[in-house]
Image (cartoon, rainbow, N blue to C red; front, side, top):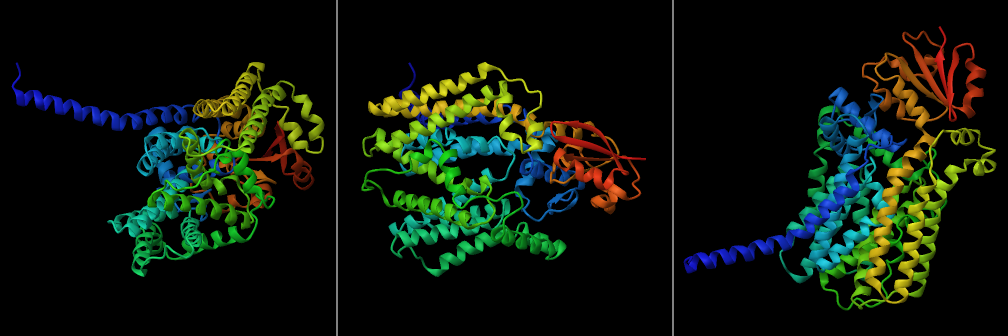
Length: 565
């Protein structure tokens, strides 16, 4: 027999191992499932103009030039964004090569990290059930799921802002309860500073305005000693100096000045091609954040909340209001401008669902009806895409005034009627979920609905998106790729694009004249020169430059030209 002390030690070891396994089993499960959702098929479809290709090209040009401090596009200064996200893409490209997978991988990793963080914070604020529901809801909400398989900046930007607000909530709650809290203030400043390095000073605006609205909610309570504001501001400043300070020290103020000027202009004026109606972001969030957007209202008082939960909830509501109001005021309307709202919406929806399941909250009839109706609308969209794809002539009468769109749909795209099956299954899941809600089988209803949403997004991204891309830009991408490795000039005419840079892999060291459209069209070019335009712009090109260029091809609304001689 084993000595008593050895038996006792082994029993304690087993208990400890069980504790560790129980504690980390959920984290491991979330990691594996998130990786399965977000990593596969990242490179299945070409990057989309503008933002995805723009950012990937800037990262590629960092590698080509070795200049990692200044963001560039077409080897010219691009002062719209700080460099942190591009550094992530550079690291990915150095490992996996210059391709779509590498460009999107940072956001897939962000997806895994976000779900783990949401689970961890939910577990700490409430309990493990809450954390699991929060992660589940976020993965099952349409737009967040989509963004984690993209190559744009916003997923990391939003996560860093969120962490800045979360630790601010921890600081404010701890301050009231007179427990150690300074580390939370420092972490809030740290993540806010990192967010600024990711996309710009709007991060600072979001955090500060959210805090201001929180104070308003608290009837002007929540102010702290001025020394804490100074500490927080100092931490933010020190973090941002990692780039701003080094850039100023190395190159002077001009790049940073242009960066700040651009941010101000973007707020005041409408960016070309990115206008929209006043309530644009409200509609985007309502429809795109299905089903979470319909569950943010919890119909029961908050008497069970502790101080940290109360402060955090109020900051989540404040940040949601701030984003919707600020970007309603901003003239430029782009879908991802309101993407931070996905995080507070996810939290509020998780609070509603866990409350409903635990019978501490109720779901109203209008919410059930709204879930049913909006779910039916989404299911009809999923069903309609392959149905229309197989009968593309149905939509031709709607496009008679748009020659470019008419030519787009002439693309030879293979659709099958069996692709309607996911939409039909989604419709069935929505109806069954509604029936279960009516019968108060709440957990079954929400689990089924969220699984159906996750499955539908996977189908949309892996089966529908590649086909849609063939209509929209594939012909142009194909043309650019045919010029890879060739010593040529390439330029778009009549429209803006970044695809020609990334997909021809242009090299640095081009003559300054090559940035001049007029020189490429009429000057003494020293190598073969190609152009691309939409068919709607072809008459303009041929009217002015028929003696200089010749059409070498047309496909799906794009016209390809080559300089004569």
